[in-house]
Image (cartoon, rainbow, N blue to C red; front, side, top):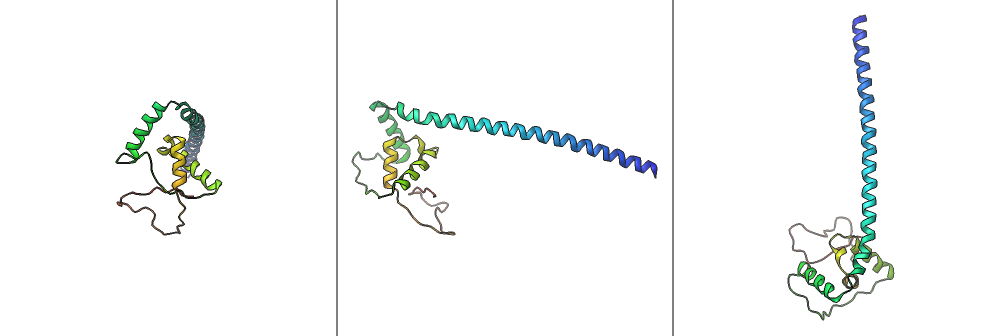
Length: 149
């Protein structure tokens, strides 16, 4: 009986040591994760600081034209007319600002210049949808853009 009790004590001691090592390793991993999250946040902040500088550096009409042509090719399958007659949708200042922030946060749309963003703000209209309503159906042709508020 004492031999079994001693074996159980040793197993318990081994389990305690293993638990302690795992807890220490877990704490180390949590510190590493926190460090990486801090680094990611710092990089995101630096990126956010660079975005306005990039848009303010696009002053020459030549560079703007080059950017618009490449973007138009990506956004529209055919060339866009310079004189579009598109009806504007009235919005409150807060609605317009909410759309502008959403566009600027989007990886693809954040590359648009201020004029293009303003055009999007003017063109978008509010649509109320409820739970269970289909917004985007897989496999359907995309002809709209949605910003969820």
